[in-house]
Image 1 (cartoon, rainbow, N blue to C red):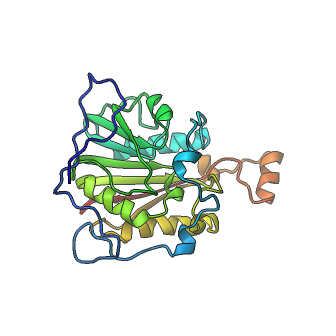
Image 2 (cartoon, one colour):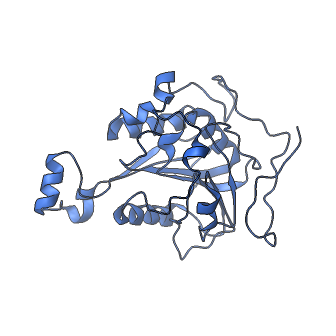
Length: 269
């Protein structure tokens, strides 16, 4: 197999992304056990993987969406979590990224690599040193060196993965030992593009689903769940009439924040 570098759309004066070596193995399409990084079991059944809109995702995301998909409270909670868990001068992979960065502005990193489905969006992200475009629902392989990242981040996008077991096995492969993966999400989605298991789930079941994505890959540490609900701010819920009406119909006044965190092999002290 030839080694080919990922599509790099940043100026050529920057360092090229290293190619994935031919010796790096992709996860098996069927469950395996015993090997670190192997898939122990499949989490989803065919119905759980299905989408209402069966068009290729590259077609759906052909045009840039330069909007924020969650509110400022969610984004602040996410940046605070990154501030707590990420170390400066490290290598970061922002998986399924977009045009905005949620990294703490005061932290500098050795390298931030972005991945997504729309090159125009990624080109506008000021924190990306490099980026590449690929559809993880067509090909789950990441053309990146094994053990080359200290952190892999995935923000409000995990609900669209139809083969999450293989993607999380790839996340494990590209992480360094002790590297962290942080998957964050809320209750928003492109409904027609979210998988059935996510569309039909509750907040609790979605947290459990992402937890199982980590647990199905041999070698990830026990996942940690972070929840910050709208009522957590100051210990009081919004008491305005509009917020009360939204709660009556099951709608929070702001976006709830969920994150599931796991490490490759061990959690650093």
